[in-house]
Length: 456
Ligand code: G2I
Image 1: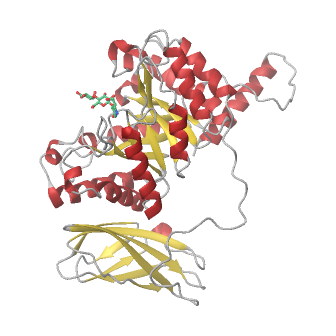
Image 2 (image 1 turned 30 degrees about the vertical axis):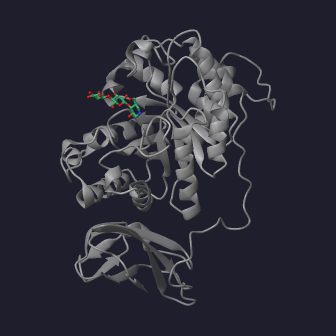
Image 3 (image 1 turned 30 degrees about the horizontal axis):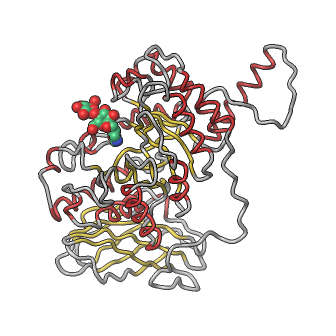
């Protein structure tokens, strides 16, 4: 995470500026008000981001505002399925990589948007169904999350899967028709591919307590109770001329389920209330300690998908609007995220492995499966015994007819029958009791696999 880096940079600049102007530095303990959105949010332990159209990074008005004001970015379109897997199995990450490089060079964190969505799918996927689509979808999640592993603060793993209106149920889509478990399968695959990223569910028309947000709330509660790896919920917040009075209460009820909440695509229709609504949304986030950041959906009014709505914080020349001032003031006035006190007990661990770790030497391995009709993703945990490991090998015998189609965080020898997985460079050396994770995807059934582990 780069927030601390940004904060340090901002503080250094402020001190240097004060000295240069001959001011006497009064080292008071009062909170110093930040002067940009990113620095002010960072002072409160949060990020403030913008959606970026990568081809605009060559526009200097655009980039000046982006680099000065924001400490987080998200690709407006370039990390969507149609953009980065235009043909099945052929990945093109060039635009997304460009954004990640820009972010890294400027101390910004990156939100990933989005691994799976019913819209902006490549043509080849639109025409698929059943287990072929389920396999393609899991492969997409795995490959993209693996490509960006370690570089993404939060992924929108699934976008807009709930229906509008009063049903509170799922939206019909080709993905939904592969089975209701497609969302949890996606989260499990993303978790296996990039265990360090926060994994979010993201949607719109969830700006208060309503049937749609309650449907999502129930899904998140269910996921948390069953150990499906979900870390955050994104509230897009494409807003009109008023804000639901229970906007903050809605964020809070999700936070109370044990997930972070993020405002992910904020923009507000122009008019008398625009500045007030921007301020109110920012205050609501600041008042929820698990609201970890805000992203606006574009930099300047004329960058917005909402065209003549003038829905953003800067005009087309890059000048700050009244809405900007309200947001900055709300960031500076808001409470910070409480810092977590140092823990003396280790954090809760995942369910115990099926094979208990050996008490001396060696290593043990356990597998958890996420299956669907015709395929599966296996997540394997390797636990070092009391002597630690320099390297490890895990052997798994697949049921007849099953085969491994891809592997992450390990190297596979063979693809059917007994398959041997060896550590890769970065996860072979484990201290006693330390755990490494790897995964593989397969076709057929993965039921009943019992891994055995040998250490070197
Ligand atoms: O619709 C607003 C947002 C709602 N939530 C999910 C977001 O991913 C979504 O973003 C918008 C982009 O801002 C638009 O820029 O998603 C649209 C697609 O549904 C994006 O529009 C597309 C156009 O439809 C394409 O014709 C165009 O080629 O942008 C593409 C790239 O400019």
